[in-house]
Length: 310
Image 1 (cartoon, rainbow, N blue to C red):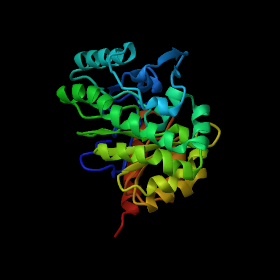
Image 2 (cartoon, rainbow, N blue to C red):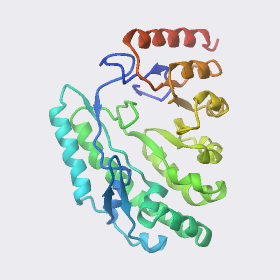
Image 3 (cartoon, one colour):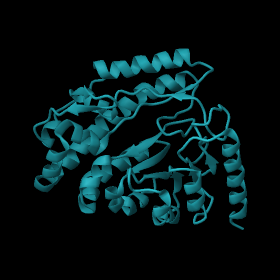
C-alpha cells in the first residue's frame, strides 16, 4: 500500500501469492530481534525463545526509569544496524528494507519494569508511570527511529515494516499491547500522551489495536486527530473478522482509514458489504492461486465502484 499523502486507498495485500507485482504486495525484509529490543538501549538484556525474545527488567520502580539514559551502542541494537546495512547492500534493486518491530511508550516501560509491577504502579503512583512513559518516548523514540530510518532513506527507499504499507517519509505502526490490562481512565492519564507524541512525530501512522481487552480504548484513540488509520487484530479464537463489523464501522465513523487484517478472502468480502470503500485496505490471510487472487482484486474494484459516494 503506497502512501503518498494519506492512508486512504482501496487495495489488496496478498503477500502469500507467489508474485512480486500482484496488487500492492512487494518484496521486503525487515530485521528483527524481538519487540522488546527498545528496552536494551536502556540497559536490559534479552532472553530468546524459539520465535521471539523478551527483556529482563532492570528498574526497581517507574521513578528509577527517569534516571536512565538511552544508548544505541548495545549488542542488540548494533545487530539491527548490521542487519539493516546488509539488507540494503544485498537487496539493492531486489527488495525493500523495512524497520524492525519496536515496542515503545508503556510497552517499553513494562519491559524495563515488568508488566505486573507497572499495573501496581498505576494504582500506587500513576504520575510516576506517566513520567516514565514520557521520558522513554521523548528521550529515545526519535533516536531509535531515525538511526535506522536514515539508513533506509539514504539508500533511496520508502518506509515500511512488518505490516506492508509503503510511504515516502516517516511512517510507522503506533501501538501499545500493555493497554489491554488497564482502565480507560488510567490509559488517558498515564499512557495516551506518549502515544500521541509518537503520532505527531510521524508523518503517517496506523495504530495496531491488539485483542478484545484493548477495545475499551478504541474511542480515545479514534478521537486523536493525529491518527491516520487503525489495524484491528482480534486474535486467535476471536474470529472471524465479520464478528467485529461494529468495530470497523466505528473506525470509519471517526473518519479514519482501516486495515482489514482478516482470516481470508470470504471474510473480507462479508465485512466489506457493511463498509464504505474510502480508506479500506484489504489484507486477507490465507494462500491463494493466482487466479483466485486476481478474481478478488477484480471483485474489490467492482465493490469500490458500486459503493462509491455520489
